[in-house]
Length: 201
Image (tube, rainbow, N blue to C red; front, side):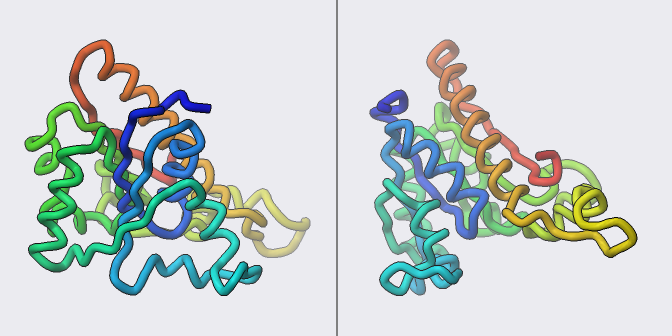
C-alpha cells in the first residue's frame, strides 16, 4: 500500500512504541530513516528469539526502514539531524522527557525551521501534568493504568499482560495521529505537534 508514498519520516526512537509507529508508516509507503546511536539501537539485542544475531522483535518493528548512525551528543550529529528534519515531512521521537529539547531538536526548534513538519513525541505521561518529566516503560505503565490489577488469577498478585500492550497501542495511536496531522496539513498547509502519552493508551 502506498498511501503515504512521497512522505519522509525521520525516526528518532528506540525500544518498541516509537518503532511500532514508524513501521506502520513504512507499511503505508512512507520513506522512514531510522536514526541510531553509534552503538546501535539497544533493542537489537532484545531476545530471544534472535535472527542472525539480532532480536526478532527489533527486526519486526523496524522492517521497511533505512538506518543512519548519528551521534546526537555532538554538534555535527545534531546539525545533520536538523538538516534532515528540514527535508522531512514527519519527525518522531521517543527520548526521555526533555532530551530532544536539550539536544536542540525539540518541537519548537525543529518546527521553527520547517513549519509544515508534523512532529510527534511519544512519552510515558505526555507533555502536561504532574508526571510529564518522568520516563517509563511498558510494565510500569501497565501497573500505573491498572490493567495488571485485572490480569492474572483470583487471590494472586497482579500480572503483566503477555505482550507489550502499552508500547504497541501507543505506536498505533501515534501512527493514527500522524496520519490525521498529515491530512490536516494538506488542507491547511500547517504542521502540528502530535503528543502521545503511553498512559493514555
